[in-house]
Length: 629
Picture: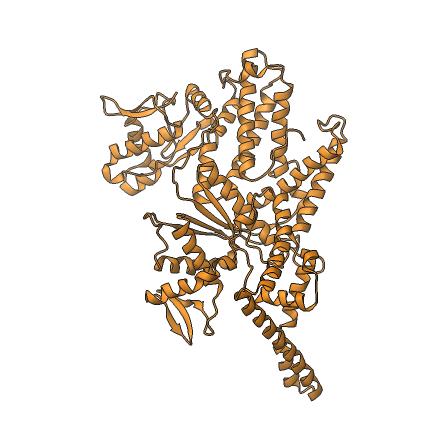
């Protein structure tokens, strides 16, 4: 059954058959009733329809009369009655009930709820599609050549990939781009160091490369503070001489790196070949971590600083020729109204900065890729930087696609991953925790837990071989990490607590994976052929069946909300609530021991629809959904 809003002869809004979700139909009915009662100036007013917290009062609550009553000077309860009198919901709901100071309670008719389940039983699962052909660019991962991936890259990659999956699920084309830090003086420094040390670049691994990076940084660092202390305390000329030697060595290292960078920029074939080996070594380790995380990215996703370097003069020229930049002590800056701090796009020595590269990236993504949504998944400390970049890009005219669509530029800031001490996660030696070591621990813990549970004689995994158990354990470990990250409000810090994350109970990834496996077990063990239940009529006679159906019908809204607001935790919250509702259904509504075959068939079909939605949601989070656990 589908519905269309129509007008009856008595002026009430009613419903006829066409294609709407019942909540969408209710929204339209109440929106029109508001206009009918208060006038055209209230067109577009949100009726504020929310799921009821207490099923005794109905399935949904309409709260519009509360705010509108205050605004119009009408007692909210009186206004609620006027709204109810101005519409007819009898096609999909029981007569509305007005409660308290003006809440309107709505209980859907069972046939309307069943019709909604039937409509979402197809491949789309009730998710509305976007039909915008412009691509969406997601800037994620953001690794630096010659450096280990750390937990910051974990968050950027997990969040960015989940957002991409959610947008793709609604039909958008998503371009995942890794803004690789592969150019500039730091890279030239480590390259010079490796060449001077005679290191075989073909046998280099990322650990060696990271060590060389640190050594190169240290050798080029002047000890200005040390010299100041020596001079202040008059320690002696021999210490001054020693400090001068250190400074001379640092200056020599920087000079050598500068010469290497110039040669690299000029395309010296030997240096370019060596530079490419550094990138290959770095990305080999990155791809291993991405594979563990179930994130599909390869060299085609890399858009590093080197990709944009030839375009930087063009970007600066656009600002200069357009009068959007001015000189300041020899440097070129972009100023913004109401902002004391300008944005530097070219240094006094002619060098470019991160902001210049990011502007070149915006221009490429908008002008050449025709993207109308740019999403940057970068830690919260970069908030001001991206505010400047976005405002500058709009000044330059890159806030509109070539075909005239406004571009939505969004920075998705995320917080830090904390240790048990509530401080940024570190190793015992005080070093940043590498992503590889963190994922390795998660997989080890997942496998240990899965093997431990398989020792129970009643466990469905009792007879599985080690290889299969290890695969399930890997899925559990990675799923635990990803869910813990995505289920939080992204901008907040969160504590990395592996004991809590790996638990099979509570608001965790393994809990959802286990719920999916249990649904699969029901479908395997039920004494029915698929043909006997796949099109069986839904029966929602029990409260637990109805509660599960009401949750399922909200799946499309959850995905739409997550895609609009770019908040994966909405998906997490829905899946946890769905699993909880399924547990209630499982406990109260026997499936294998159902009293009648028609009831059993209906419940099996409801189980399967729930399983499909849960698997769909886990996939949006990039989490595997094992069939057995």
